[in-house]
Amino acid sequence: MPAHALVPDDVRVFERGWLSSNNILLCSDTGAALVDSGYVSHAPQTLALIASALGTRSLDVLVNTHLHSDHCGGNAGLQGHYPALRTLIPPGHAEQVRQWDAEALSYGPTGQSCSPFRFDGVLAPGSSLRLGLRDWQVHAAPGHDPHSVILFEPEHRMLISADALWENGFGVVFPEIEGEDAFDEVAATLDLIESLQPRTVIPGHGSVFHQVDTALDVARQRLRQFIADPRRHARHAAKVLMKFKLLELQQVALDDFQRWIGQTSYFSILHRAHFKTQDFRLWIEELLQELVRVGAARIDNQTLFNQ
Ligand SMILES: [Zn+2]
Image (cartoon, rainbow, N blue to C red):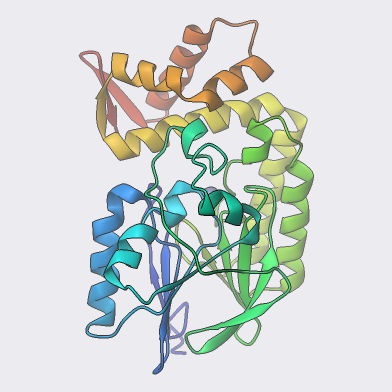
């Protein structure tokens, strides 16, 4: 690969942002595979990006690292456009996808959306699969999501880390929202990543990076803070859910936002588990003010704006 490039030419990373996960297109002369498909409201944009990269060729394989709404929201659109597309998902939620159980798949309790999609096979941890020009190992990576996998290409030591490791942290630990201990799993997954000794990490969000040791240090430091004070993680999780919705809506009347919060069960679960001595509305108000204080949101004329 050229010295200036972070990844080889056959690996194309579409860095999307926080509402949509990054999309990774892996191409060879005989086929094309995509890892993760973004959020449903960006589905037309995802399709346009992939179609313009592939031209007249078709997309053959779609892989999801995990089934959070920001990683598989483009699946349905891609399946519609490429009828022969084979979709592979982690095994943990296969039954829930088959039956389309939006509660178990987290779309209900997070108040997020995802269009139903089909799948054709699962990504068994311990196996490997050819995507584009390369063989990728499938590793279980519980923590952020109990069923997530990460993909490792040993020759160039490239890691597709999903939300298990970003340059500056990792994704909210979803099982902890539901009262299940998962900080140990986050730590074990960080240890696994260290043991793979990746040279390049392609994260689920944010830029591709090489400074893996630094990123692991940052992630472990953050994890220690959450373990020492689980309420800190609970507040963080609630704010992430709010910010995600705001990224989707861009602007919303405060009353409507409060209504959405009232219907989104993760907020009441977090409140009950960690903050039940405080009035629910006041707790929500405080979190919104924190988002405003750090410049992530703006309130004007009873309307909440994304910033
Ligand atoms: Zn995720």
